[in-house]
Length: 202
Image (tube, rainbow, N blue to C red; front, top):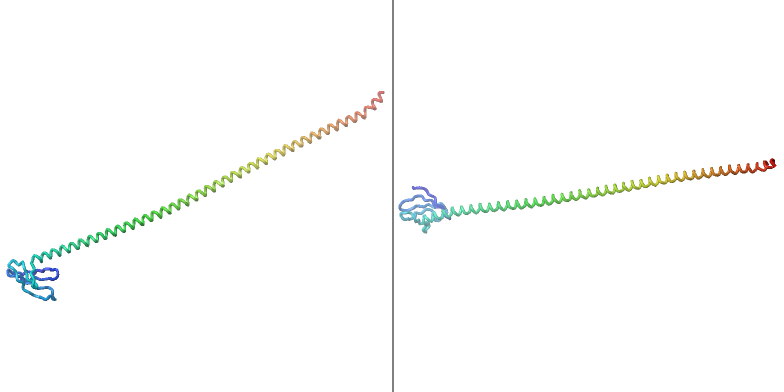
């Protein structure tokens, strides 16, 4: 027995049991194969084998092996590329969703801030208007009170002046009447006494 070499074909796996200068003896690994064991004729360099009635070159075996390796590498590369594309797509989708969520959150926050600002502005305006109305009302009340006080003072002063004038006039009238009565009384006395005096002198 020579070295054991396993040859992988697309559909058949053959084990090389013995390599000699006269030929190559192959035993098919597939037990269901129609040909279970066959001595294959070959040239001295072993480049050709007769398997299942057909010619297959050793170089073709290695070529198919290389193609298999290349196919496996290509499949792996394709799978890796597809996975990378899927990962990139998923990452992009996650980024897009995150950006959309961030935009929505920012918009909602801005709307809430604007609502709060509007409410604050409205409250401030209402408070300012109420304060202005209260101040104006107080000023008007103060003005009315001042006017009323002034009017009352003027009325009191006028009343006092009128009373004083009336008192003065009454006093003057009384004094004048008293003076007139005194003059009349003196005159009457003089008139009553004067004839008798004159008769005595005559």
